[in-house]
Image (cartoon, rainbow, N blue to C red; front, side, top):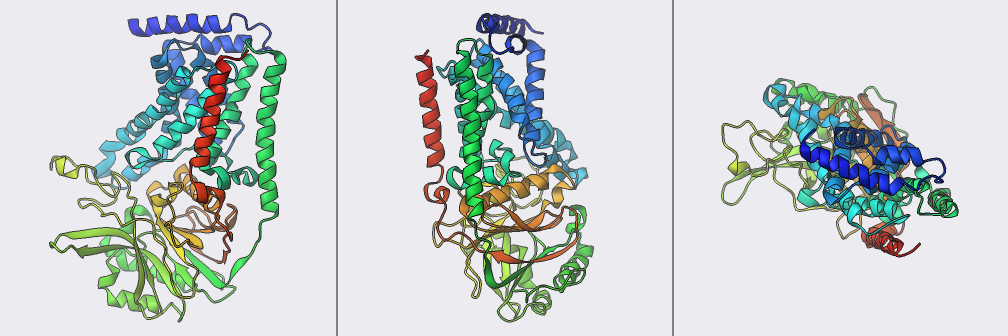
Length: 549
């Protein structure tokens, strides 16, 4: 331990002891509070790391929401015991580091697809990215320590700062809104309905507030009645949200769009084989065979839309009339086949560009609609600052190689005759709240094509599917998701899965298209302003707590 660490630890111990000296009547928690508050040096860091890792169990695929108070309540006690903002930042950083190391371990699997080129980047994926994301958690706890709250204001200060940090993480530097606390409720449909009113950021802030309020049980500055009342209000608040969500679900219609049947094709092509030129025909034939009904039960009605996943076609379809002819043989008049496909074209100056695209083909094999992905994955589909990277450094984007993909113009609503208008989203684009539809015209459903084969049988595809389900609730629109290796499915506008193909399965599923809500949800209308109002209200309570006994 360094001299600085020892001094910080001593100061933290003194501050923690001062905070808990009178804690002799706080419902039997005095010793527990004292232990956490007195931690210093490497012990404090290790405990913070462990608490962050533990909090991952609340999120998909585990969904153990009950662990959140166990992970966050000690964090509130430890923040209150820190001697200053810097020490609180360090505490939050270690918590976040543990949280993201465990929660995002699956990202490293993408580097092993071409291990010869990218395995050397494993430390960056395993520790580097979590270290950067942990800066937001550190900033949140530093802000919570700086807020002038006491008593109930301490846990609310953590909730306010945490919510603001999650929002910033979802927007700064192109954004990465993964591992948001609100996703803990994906397996609890009644609670998940709050996303239709407050979005995932608002639901997350309320969740952190409810999970941290039990920290007041160890606060001797509050009366026993006040402590119990605070916890009761938190429990009742969550129960009220769940009750309102249950009523919303009870009144939810189960209608489907007449005459529209979707066929979701999941080819289960391993990523390390996907782009091999010698297997191009094999993979294409697999998609055609599955689409024709091979290995699947007959559709309950004529298939109107057959859907293939992201880059299901690994060649330039526009330049291959024979491939389009073979696709056309599957499509009835008035029906379509929608597939992910790479696209290329030259600019006016002769520069060749590439897009990660979606194409819709009719029964004549014509491409009648097209969409280009607009929110690209940094380091996956393009290399930021590529012009400044030395040529000798093997830092090509993992998915696009030596050439970057170009970004499309933004969210679009595609109108295909005979179908409700659709908002297409390719892979990563579905993770961004409030950014999955064009301002107008409003679509009637969301279509997410993705390729989660990069991540194998890990938690990543489960998390991605859970995130996509929340977009359906926020927007009040059904969501159809088709993935190369899973998870594919149809989700109604209340987040309920109507049809599903599991991770790793090869096959098809036929399902009707659910009807979206007649009116946009509150979240669709006001966006994150409701979340902002929550933060302002919470901050007001924190400030008032400073001057209220």
